[in-house]
Amino acid sequence: MAKNIVVVGTQWGDEGKGKIVDWLTDNAGGVVRFQGGHNAGHTLVIGEKEYKLNLVPSGIVRDGVHCYIGNGVVLDVHHLLSEIATLEADGLKVRGRVTISPGCPVILPYHSALDRAREAKRCSDTKIGTTGKGIGPTYEDKVARRALRVYDLFHPETLSAKLKEVLEYHNFVLTQYLDAEPLDHATILAQALADAEQIKPMVGDVSAALYAANKAGQNLLFEGAQGTLLDIDHGTYPFVTSSNCVAGQASAGTGVGPGMLHYILGITKAYTTRVGGGPFPTELDIDTKGTPGYQMSTVGREFGTVTGRKRRCGWYDAAAMRRSAMINGLTGLCITKLDVLDGIKELKICTGYKLDGKTLDLLPLGADDVARCEPIYESMPGWSETTFGVKRWEDLPQAARDYLLRLEQVTGVPVAIVSTGPERDETIVRVHPFA
Image 1: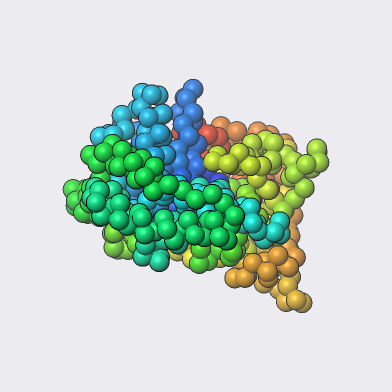
Image 2: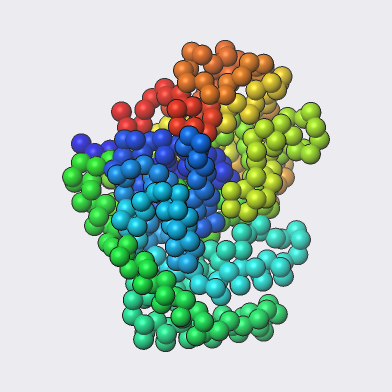
């Protein structure tokens, strides 16, 4: 019987989901993206080769695996074609192995123009830290029922009329409120139609294809982007992304029933990072040499795959993880970047917070409350030995095993996998999700 797994980030994104999806794909026939856009970034290291993916699912580097882009994804078609061209130049077969839902809302130049202009207009303390790629404005159009979808690209006359109407609205906002330049209808239309011709062979009924694959006995992997604490409903709003990036979105964002989602694997770093603005209770100084935060930043190479921005770093936040575990219904955890902590003498775990004289064991629901939380820490001894590339649980230092088991205890979720490096085989398996 086929088994399907949803892989989600459980922190503020950048947890290392791409490597784990690629590793699990050895047991899967298909990999599915179900939300977000090209603001997501997954880096895969396969031997001597490094692949950077934004829209194409991580299964693309495995021969024979089909990749699906579900209706929950907002799609910059021009960027997708550029990404495909890069992958094909690296020797991968892509075009015959990707199916795109016609229901994907399309990101067009006015979306990114709005995104950048709005961020520029915000005061410094209210900046969201958006990537400026048009993700939010496209989701806004979707909810407002004025979005152009992939389906529309193949009907030129109605596409032109719809584009004229929506562009008139957005150009008014750009010029009259945001003091930005208007965009040209003919230019956008011509590019959209040219891109449509190239993606047409890849567009198909993703929902039906997934049901057929599952019925044929194929295991499927549903690949989340960003992280749970950036979810538009459940994250530290408004410092969040514009989509639902929790496990339940795998159903809505692809058109399969939740009964087809059998195992929810949460990816979490052995510490915590965040990119952009927003509260971060366990944040550390990352600029002072010799400090734990500096080591996390430098050894962990904590720079955003998409933006190149330096990530903020901090101690592991188990109270935030408990919130993620509840929202996602996690079955198991995969701990990544354990080796980054090698050599830190004393490790701290946030087990809860103090807020207004009360003790909390869950991340609060409001960003203002999160910003006022004082973390409650417990300390554990670190280890001096290296954990990089270790492939067996028993070969880890005892202190590292103790740390991992404590994370299991304080989060309430069993540790199924430990990633000890970027390569596929630098992985410790305690419980295989596909077993």
